[in-house]
Image 1 (cartoon, helix red, strand yellow):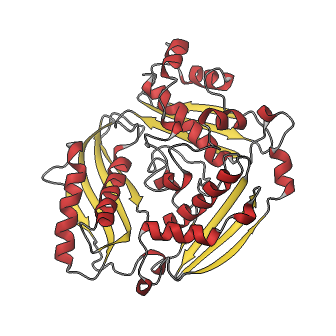
Image 2 (cartoon, rainbow, N blue to C red):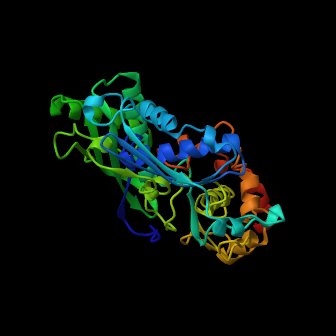
Image 3 (cartoon, rainbow, N blue to C red):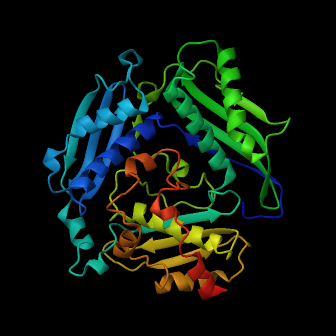
Length: 392
């Protein structure tokens, strides 16, 4: 999407809360939420795997009072909330088998994170993280991703309400958008595969197309030529973890920007904020969104890199895809200075208050994207004026 003067079609996808990988993410993040509620200095790296009537937790957790947390009960609550409530379907909160293989964090890792000076807390791992923002939607996210999320959120709402009573939790959506000169001008194709009870395919097609049209109507980009592909393989009754296994961290592109820009490769779910895979990616999004909101660029991607145990980032790189009003190196220099955004792990955790979620939770953020959420602290636009003053 960097060639702003060309016509091209770009596609992004989303998956529902009942997709097996998202079930795993939600359980991992619910365990994280429970740990932080007990101990705001907890170190959590919780992985989850789900399959037919099975949930497995494994990973490393160091948390005061962890022995009081019932991780199986947490998994059951998540599965019930998502809507897997029928044992006949092969995965249900009522009767799943559970394996717990969580243990304490390695002291070799912990010694690099904990420092005498809290401000110099080291990064929990090496790696590079990316943040991105674009002004093409009110959410400051790419339209194909926003549209894909919107379809599945609307369908989930109707499912939970019982308005479409044959819908089941597992689903995927995909939206293709035609761009011209870097701006979206039409939706060319919509794909939606949704798990259902055994009802006539014609009814499913009619009901879901109506919902999708309503979901996307506000974009103004549906045309007479928009093609709808609903359950294109036909019957989709066996789904969820009974149809395909799920693992934490397998939907990192759905979680971020739908394939636009770059991704460092690290997953978010199940990781406490000392893991920069998560916290620095949130902070980079925060900075990128404020840069775009300040009018410094129409699109902005930030790469930040860390070494394990070292507080200050190795590098910060800025890309504005030819839309910048200020030289990219000037923006990067300002970010590296720490004057407006401080990318040291302790500072970014403090700025976003990532160890004390208020009005949001990690478990709720793991479905339909981690970004574009009004109640998330990394979505605030509160430093745009400071950026303007420094750079314009």
